[in-house]
Each structure stands twice: as structure tokens, then as C-alpha cells.
Length: 553
Image 1 (tube, helix red, strand yellow):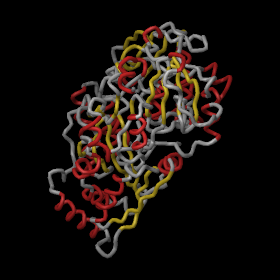
Image 2 (cartoon, helix red, strand yellow):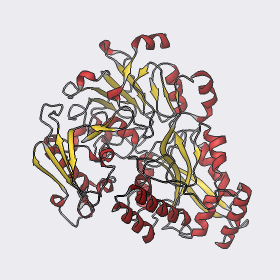
Image 3 (cartoon, helix red, strand yellow):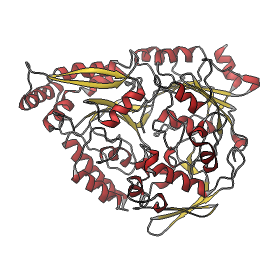
Image 4 (cartoon, one colour):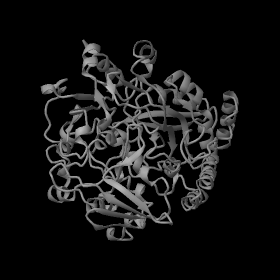
């Protein structure tokens, strides 16, 4: 899933912070003047969260970034959900069983309600998944459900939505038929793309169902208000089946795209947690806010894509030169400085069901030798010291701190006879251009949708909407297909590793580093547990009000 890059350059997929205008007000409710909700309205327990970016949508079928998932995932619940450690547990389904061949899963719905009192049924899931895959919905995450039988054919218009491999024999039974066994399915089902939507609300109100006052949820919180570019406020849902154990009355998410300003708000007590850190302030944070710093490895890869439909990026020599020129150790030790790990592959370390160890052939080569090799390759491709490649490095508009990464990469590429002009667009425009292939080189980060290497390797599948580079290698796709049919996880992992090796030998992508979490969380926020998926649902949080008062007085 798209990750917001602030400490890292806020780039691909952060859609909308500057672009949301009156049309966004139609999604979020009536626009009001910018305000900060009171710290404790009428004695309520309020959790103030710095959320890195403005949501473009709160519709589960249209969500694309983790900053949106943070909000929607506290309102909607899939068949399974995450516990505080990010592990899958029963959600809308209370039990399930699998056929002997692993192709059919039967989920038994728990008895619970939508926030308007209507029962949540298996048909709400059938409706949601068909809607997600309907070509008319134009959901960029539709491919996520391609493991469901006939999903790709439905999404490409070759079959009607009724042919999708889902069924509701009765209101309490949801049956899923898969294209291939998926031993990771329970975690897969925690993703926002698998969430239900209330059919009765969608059919009655159309797109307006996501407005504050109309939003209908089956999770712990409901949408109270959305003031574009200021905050999204959620309130506890009294009809949630586990409401008695939800300790937060109100969550307020702020689109803190300026992380220097967000740090000031955190220090002033306006935020209880902040999603990302300003790298220029990391020494101050370590010295003065060590008890709030959460800095653990997460399954996220920062990378660049070169558009292979444009010359000269269809030339593997140029793509290799681009990779050679990027000094990953300098980026992590001098620029980000928070503990990120230099990346020489796409799949981050520590991911499940994977042997790991796949890397670019040049990993052991000293940087001066890499530059020399990059220069030779560029000269072979027709460029040189007196004939630099003129190109663009597309990024989302970012703060001065966030610009340090693309600026450093720009300087590194220059050593390889590549002049990359940094081009900034607001999130909505930038994202649209990348999706349409209207860029030369673009920057992105990808966080795991579930703990399995395919969430990263599928980024390079031909036809995937998130394959920005337009990379295509039939051998690569064939290995992924072959691995999808292998039930032995060890053999499957070996096949996937071979696929990653093919992509790296093709220099299909330019991974730069693997993330650490980089959050600030006040010690009085209880229930926050670091985990590889960086999942932190408000359902598990509580506030020690006495400690908060002592901290902020």
C-alpha cells in the first residue's frame, strides 16, 4: 500500500492534500472553518493523531494509501481484523473452514450491526467485492482480489460481476472460491480492499454515502466530521459488537504533511502521536523525546521507477546506470538518519514465507567503482560528459525537509551524466500522471498489504495498475503464476526469490532503502504495539489521562 513520504519525500500515491476543494467537501461533509477540536470535549477521551496526508476518499473500494487506511480501518472491519500486534483475528466473521484443496473458504458471520441498526450480512461482502471489481468503479486496488476465482476476468470486463467466485448461501455464510490456494488468506482479509460496504446505504445515497452523517460502519468508530485539509473526526460506535472494550471516545486525524510543523504541534501537546518525523530534527528528538520515539523495522520499501515506455529507459544499460549511481548508504546515514536500511532488492528483510538474500549484482562493489561502471554504461547508451541525459524526477510537492532526498538523488545521478530536473505536483495531479505513465522517473514507497513477498513482487506484474515502470518480462510473470499454485511454502518462496532475481537483473526498479517506523507516540498512549505491518488500530488504544495531564501541564 502506498506510504506517505515526509521524512522520505512525500511522493507517489499521496493524493489530494492540495487538490481537495469543494468536490472533496461533498465527500467529507459541509466544509467549515479550520479548527482544532477541543482536547477533551465534555469529558470524552480524545486521541489526536498526526496522519501524514489528506485522504482523497474514505470509500473502502477507492482507498489507496495507508493514511486513508488508518481512518477507514478504524471504521470498517473485514472478515478478519488485526489485533494490537497486527496479527489476524476474527472480525466480521467469527469462524471459518477451508476445503481440503485450499480453494474454498467458508466464513461464518458473527451477529452484528451496521451503525444505523441494519444487520451486517454476507450479502454486504458479496456486494462490496463485486463493486470493487466492477470496471465502472475504476478501483486501482481491484487487482488485490485477483486471487478470487474469475476476479481478473470480471475486472477486465470479460465476465459479469455475478461470475465472481463469492456467494452468500444465507445471510450468515460467505463462501469464497480462489484461483489458487492462499495460505496467507486470513491476513490478506484484513486489507481495506476486502472490507464490506453497506449495500442499503450505497444504493440509497450513491457516492454521498461517505459523507459525515451518512457514513455507515460496522467497526469501532464512525465518521463525525471531515474538514478538508484540517482534520477527520471519528466517534465511538455504540453499536459495535465489542464497544464495551473500546476505550477511546473520539479519534481526530490531522493531515500533517509538514513534519517540522507537526513536531511543534506534538511538543505543544496538540498531537498525541505523529506518523512521521522530520529528519533534520532527529538528533533533537533522540535527545529530548526518546520516550516517545518509536523506531522499529517495518515492511516498507522506498524506491524509484523509470518509465520503460519512454526512451532511453527501455535500455537496460540506462536503468543499471541509474541504480549504480544511487548511493544508498549515504541516503540512509546522511539524509534520513533514522535507521533505515540500504535496499539492494525490492522485498524487505524479515517478511514471511521468503528465503531472502536476493540483491543486485553490484551490492559488494564500492561506490566509486559503481560510478565508473555507470559512466561506462551511459557512454555505451550514447551519453557522456558533454552529452548528459536530460530527464525529470517527479515527486509530490513536499516540505523543504522532505526535498532533501530527491535533491541528494539528483546530485548522485549527475555523476552518471544524468541531469534530473525535480518536478513537483500536488498529490492528485502527481498520482494521476504516474498512473497514466506521464513521467520519466518517479519516487514512491510501498508498505506491505499483508506479510508475504507477493505484495511487493506483484508491483512488477504486467498490467498491474501500480507497476509504474511498465516493466514486462513473461518469465517473471510466469514464475509468479507458478508460485501461486505451489502449496509448499518453502518451494513457493524459492520460486518467488527467482522471480525477484529476474527483476533485479533487468534493473526493473530502483529500491533505495527499507523503512523503520519513525513515529512519535506519547507514553501516556497505551495499547500501541510496534509491529512489522505498522498497524495501529484505535480500537486497542487508551489514554492515561492522569499521565497526559502531568506531561502537558
